[in-house]
Image 1 (tube, rainbow, N blue to C red):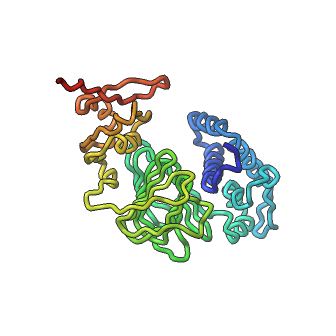
Image 2 (tube, rainbow, N blue to C red; image 1 turned 135 degrees about the horizontal axis):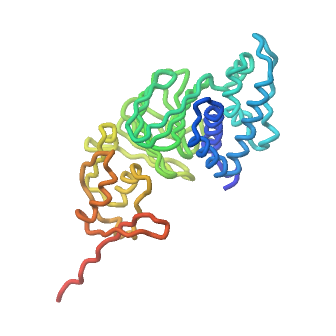
Length: 337
């Protein structure tokens, strides 16, 4: 993967992450575990290290700049380091430092480059309810990471991983955008759910309306959902796939701490199960994926479900070379006669 192949959402995710790590590594309470996690992130991709270096330049430069009540416009020392990045992409990384510079921050805010608020949330092993800077709320499923920034022209949440249910404060002049995967969902005030799994994103609308696009670079178009509708998109999709939910839909059962599998094939059930496992289950073949499963489970006890599957389904468990648990269908004996 090279820089030119990344979408706007993916580039923003890198700058968001660099901004987060810059805050944490300069915080007094930064732990050794966090520093180790940062080193892992920085070495994961060349752009991570590049973004971090640019962030450090800005941070160090800002430390030596005077902070009078009125200050000259400050040029951002980032353009030469990432030639193909626009100032808007670079500005997210610069935001933390510029917020300490009154006039520089004001100019960045007026241009729509710099947010006046940055928030980061992680749910860990418990359902978590958070209030965002604009008064909107988000319920986070287990293992969810969410970032929020408030710009002059939009409120932006980035779902890094997991699932979140949003109740957005209405503001027709200040749209609320959730970026997830390769696309985004734009609203002015409504209630909806966003689930990110691998390169797939599923949006479920409960109230109001939202505009969903599978390409975050195309911010002027999209597909409008009404209450009870869902949209699913993957990276590279030209457009999302739309569908209608029904009264027995269980997509939001997680908000009550439940995982409900209602006569689903294992193909359909595994993404729902795997979001609660540190190591995802895999299917041995397509015939195993056709086996159906039903049941209601506590989302904090899904790990127990794995060991019980051979007791309720015609399958047995093995491990592949990578150490993943694999579900295998038990072959039926040939028919007699």
